[in-house]
Image (cartoon, rainbow, N blue to C red; front, side, top):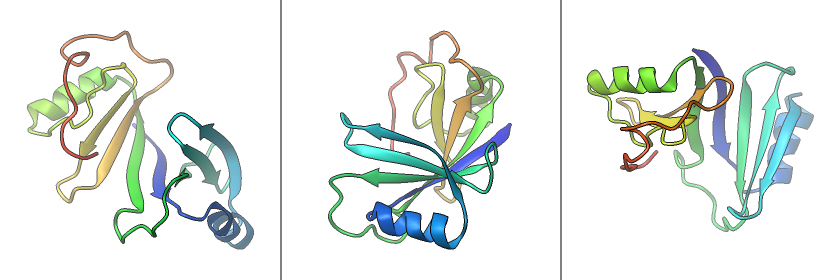
Length: 139
């Protein structure tokens, strides 16, 4: 397993970038605008290839985020998303967002911290029982 990023939601992109880039010295490693979802993802790191902070800007967010709501999730790259999800499930962990696409799943820690699991490399072929398993709860 490899630690990838931590996501936080930001209301004001310019203020966030001023803080993280201009004041702390992080570099923007990549950016993705998603018009259909009305959000932008901006990834920052201390150096290329290092774990990142993912700034998520929801375009229509008008009010400030409450404490706790602005923190999103931890993310880890895993060797076999299906095997890990099966192991976690057998150990009593609820798979909140199953890896239906062979690429991404979400679980939560006992303290309700969202953890994103991402398949290393290409997505695995879609397979059951994951393909038809619904999401549940918040993630």
